[in-house]
Length: 121
Image (tube, rainbow, N blue to C red):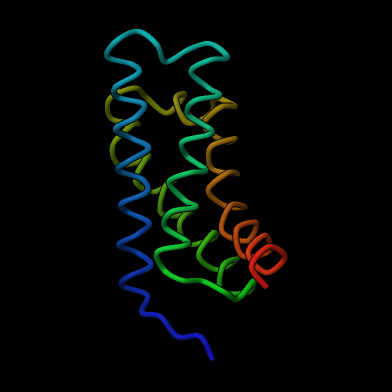
């Protein structure tokens, strides 16, 4: 039976949020936050950061990976509400690219576990 503390899950969720937030801050600081190139880089790095978190946690259960995806997505939405809304207003959370990012955070843990089961047995 797979067991992991929820404190570690929350910690990794915060680290993934911080990494993604820093990426967008960096792109915004240099005027590179918009356009297909920036979005492609952001989505790829979002998936890569979440992939790293899933692999670091050693998740091997689809159900547990799904729970991590739910927890991390809720956590990212709450943190965006705390940090982004005061600076950019609530309209910032309604942009489609933000919700695509949330979808990547939601689905990536389950995809990584499924891929791992197929690839690594």
